[in-house]
Image 1 (cartoon, rainbow, N blue to C red):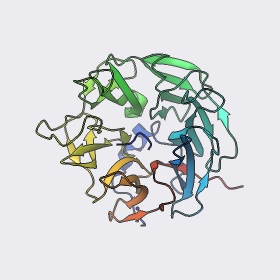
Image 2 (cartoon, rainbow, N blue to C red):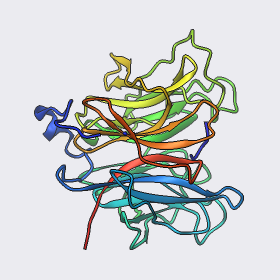
Image 3 (tube, rainbow, N blue to C red):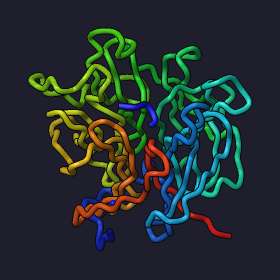
Length: 325
């Protein structure tokens, strides 16, 4: 699939009181009662390779471009009222550094002085530390950094390919997407989700793609970006199985792996609301001619499409707290 890339809920379904304390450091710092917005990435101008970060209300209204820059901006993580995005502004084309802004794009701040890879990220310690993937020309390890971009710790996975790091288990472990070769261009990639201690020790494979399934192409996700459910009990991810991209889940011990959703559209990158009542999903047709952002009622499974056809690529949804002056 392309690199760049529904309706009310009465009560949380999986959020367990007994898990609150143990997962607090992994949860995004969003008051469940606060009004949320959705952040997503848009290809504004294909010819100019211009990607922007947009925000919109939970009903799809008030769509706005919050980066408004000529190059490439992609957001893969938000926390509280902060939106983190990578951008090639003020540098060479697709030379990406990390920045932050708010849901309106009112202020922007550069965080890293080293280049980042095209990868998701996450946070721990009440948002004081981020885990990111530096560009391969910088390092092959994950970096745990503070909010000023200082590298606090390197995490070596000892796999040829590692991306999309996600803090789990109170931030003591990391789930990530790994491969047995350096890229999908090289035979034997065998993409899967792995879990590893934040020290880089005790790596284990979590997901196992069905050996009998031959419907996923060479560049299709067999185990896409992991997302932690607010209960802290499992991660969800996209995978092309039986000829269709759907969302799947796996427990953190790897003992249970299952199909999570059953929507007609292909499902891609996605995110849980902080209390688990919403699931925002990237939806697209088989030919990838149109990508939409949908919002799903996790209790009733009702889906609402929030985007229109103004743009073809509308992807990678996330939740951010709205701060209104």
